[in-house]
Amino acid sequence: MKLNLEKVKGFSVIFIKEERIDAHNSGELKAYILHLIEQGEVNIIVQIECVRFIDSSGLGALLSGYKHATAKSGKLALACCKQQVLSMFELTRLNRVFDIYADLNEALENET
Amino acid sequence: MCNKVIQVEVIIPTQTKYLDLIGSIGEHIAKDLEDFSGDREALAYHLNLVLTEATTNAIKHASSAMQKDTVKITIHIHDNELNIKVYDHGQGFNMETVPVPDLDQPKEGGMGLYFIRTLMDSVSYTRLDDGNVLEIIKYL
Image 1 (cartoon, each protein chain N blue to C red):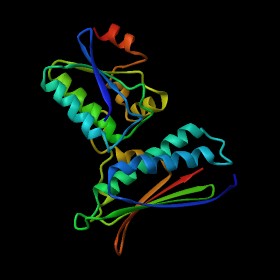
Image 2 (image 1 turned 45 degrees about the horizontal axis):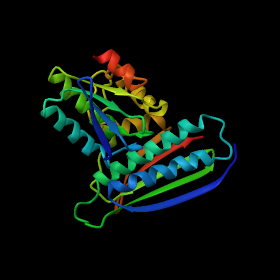
Image 3 (image 1 turned 60 degrees about the horizontal axis):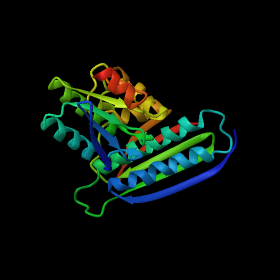
Image 4 (image 1 turned 90 degrees about the vertical axis):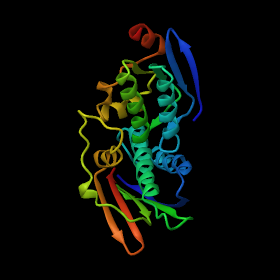
């Protein structure tokens, strides 16, 4: 899984650099987010601008991160979600679970 | 509606690195359909997703006894019917006992079959002599 991590305004921002999140790389993403949380980085924004496809395992990896972050009084939000990817969150009603922002600035303004 | 007959057969090793290939085939087929008046981009995503989920499922249920196990995927379009079959050599499962996910209590797993059932028109899982086949039909 290609990704970058930046610390911005107290948030760990994960920039996903893959077009697809599926069963081939979602396990790696899940483990990466959980590792961050275990290190105390519980306020996370996942920037998914590059992602044009996500499957059930990708949604599961993000949900896992969300649950673990909130269990430690943190948060996990999403930024830059393409319409087709957003439709997967809507189909599963996960758009009610995650805060999903149009861009990173909006995410940082609303979450900080 | 009168699409030309399209028949695709792909056999892959039971490795998730091939999901991109399988999903992309579905996406390309949707984008190249000659007579389709619906939302082509949505259909492309849905075929990508359904093929990805079905193939993932087949890889998960692959026979552990066969080190070089494979998954066969066929896609057949005739008239307005798009038919996908995904063959595995595993123990199989009872599709009727797979619960519908509670979307108000989201869990990490169990969404794959939900996507297939929700986005396609017909889904069945049948035991064969040497494995199983998941058959998915979408009317275009």
